[in-house]
Length: 507
Image 1 (tube, helix red, strand yellow):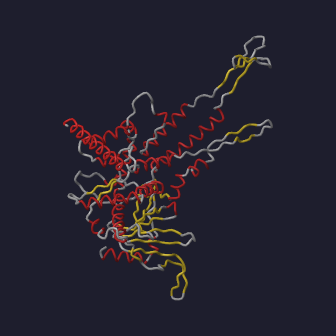
Image 2: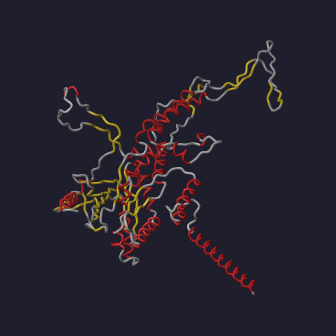
């Protein structure tokens, strides 16, 4: 941190009230259009006067995101404009038939689908050192081993899930009481408000978290590249006068990392572009259900004069018409098929999938009788894969910072517990790239055959093939080694027996 940034951080820490500001989330806008007529005609190479953007956008709260995510909080459940059913009684009065409105979890389904395709595969690590030594490869393997043991892929998935649900999320790295590197999720649903602070050129200089503890006491935690500052809101005595404000009772403390240990990410919620379509779909869906409940049930229509007793032949009831003209009949009347409304809902459902970049495949969509390969399913889910590929680029900085913080924290842990006294300098030599890998539907047979082909072609090692195939157990490599040892012992035994038989024949 240079002196200019250090002074800016100190100024902000001196006025914590200024840190309690956050850029809101927006949905929709009210734009002030520029009067193009006033600009007049211009030549193609002629300059015009620069104008600052004039646009007003509609803010939306993170509470609203949580309401949209929870079906029990959807607007349609409280919409009095959705029609109800009334029945006329014998006395001429009307009574409303009970009908519970229904909300659909489209937002949750879209979010879960996007998280699956983005985080369904483990983080992919690449060692960028051109000529790594044997020790470098060993340290690289150690980092990946601890990454799995500490469930960092799970923490990454929780962070993506929280961001796509509430707009932003944070992942805090820290050392626990045993000196082990750990991470925890900070999100709005758990009561944490993320407050990032950038300098004039857009670089992050502070990460702040505003929350209240179990006693209702408000806290403001701030992190820069070196220190951790914790403010508490309460009574402050200044010149004998008691006021209410922020204090830092424990002063600043070194957090132990080379950069800010809090990773934050902000973006649109998963269903942001289709929320209006979902609301319209839910309204039409409930109206459709009301109509079906009122008029969708069939009725038995009987005309003519029939005997009160009826015969039952072969399981069917036979009515006998006793009228003189013999034109009595009995038939089952069904309600007209509301095909237009069904087609409208299908169109809206397709619009939801297109607008959100997600695809929902149901059992009825799978036609049996033909070969359905993983490639075919991938083509069907092209929108999901494209959305996830864009997410890999969007989340690249998060993946890189997670790798850097975990690598540095693990090095300090190994030095502290005595397992590797030179871990800090050794790990600093490693240049590791961390990337999200898009999850795609696949055929296990095709995938395992691909591993076999790569191994036989010398591109893939046998160890990687054992680790990556879908049928391996955790100790598969040991089992393979045991089988090879048994085969080698059998071959040696057969060789000895053959030698003894040759000697006996010579004698």
